[in-house]
Amino acid sequence: MKYDFDRIVDRKSTYDMKWHSAAVESYLHCRIPENMIPMWLADTDFACAPVIVEAVKRRAEKEIYGYCAPMADFYKSVCYWQKLQFDWTVEPEWISYTPTVVASINIAIRAFTEEGDGVIIQQPVYDPFATIVKNTGRTVVNNGLVVKDGAFRMNLEELETLAAKPDNRLMVLCSPHNPVGRVWTKEELRAVAEICLKHEVMLVTDEIHSDIVYEGHTHYPLLTLDERYAQHFIHLTAPGKTFNVAGLKVSAAIIPNEEIRTRFAKMQIAMSLDVRNTFGIECITAAYSPEGAEWARQEVQYLQENVDFLENYLREQMPEVTMIRPEGTFLCWLNFSKLGLGDAELFRRFLYDAGVVCVQGPWFGPGGENHMRLNIGCPRSMLKEALDRIRRAVYA
Image (cartoon, rainbow, N blue to C red):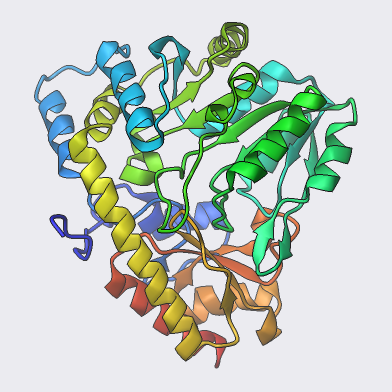
């Protein structure tokens, strides 16, 4: 490999909240051991791609950091990346700069629903989906995932029933799915889209993990599967997960339909979420490049090896702990139900006996019981140390 993903980067010398006990305590509302290994927050512990580091350095050397606006290079880079990764021809005018995908979901919910309306999500899923819905005065409507034939599946029959209810006006689809790691097939995506079209439900796709997909699986941006989907739905993406640049606050909403795009933009301005990050602009134009693509390719290869390592470790060292192998993302969904510890005791052992901080399954909603989400986006030596600690703790 050209890039060294085994290298340990000192994140305690920065303001990285993942590695600072006080920051973790404020998030999890409990005491955090100083010797913790943080496997919770969904960023990686890899140094950023050199092409991004150099771009940020060059911009910093210009000695002024005032308000900036994305110019032609920004839009050209987003278009280049979608074409390279997914063979999707995106027009520059479809793209809106947004600070984060989560902010974009918030904008969309406020723009296309009213207070009291239902928003469909598929739990267990990234908690901010439900939190945003509740905080905006909307109602969480859970179309829970099911396990069938050894894989997580959508309950499409239930989704049809939920979408048919007039008060359920919008759906947020996590694709690939956090935390279960599914990369949805064309058939699954089309089924969801057709249900939403039929019942006039706005479909918003969070595709932030779309670059991290493992061998044997393919990510399809939902809007590419049918022109009707492109004209009715919203695609959200960002370099944050792939390139570990979440702190630079840059993402993109891709909305081909002008009327929908205008409505989205008006709400974005009303929420004061239209200010751009100077270094975020530099980051995305550097990341979405041939150099960035090669770095990302090697990262995915390394992550797939981490998945292999974890799978083998569980089989050999913790056979009672099971995992449905992720098809994408750097997040693994571990099932501890056979140990019979319960969520509170499991969390206590992870945190205080092992000193490993993971996200408890219930944080993701119904279906998360007896699970922990483990972030494998780290050097393998760190992953092994965390697993050794977990093994000693759960079998104590």
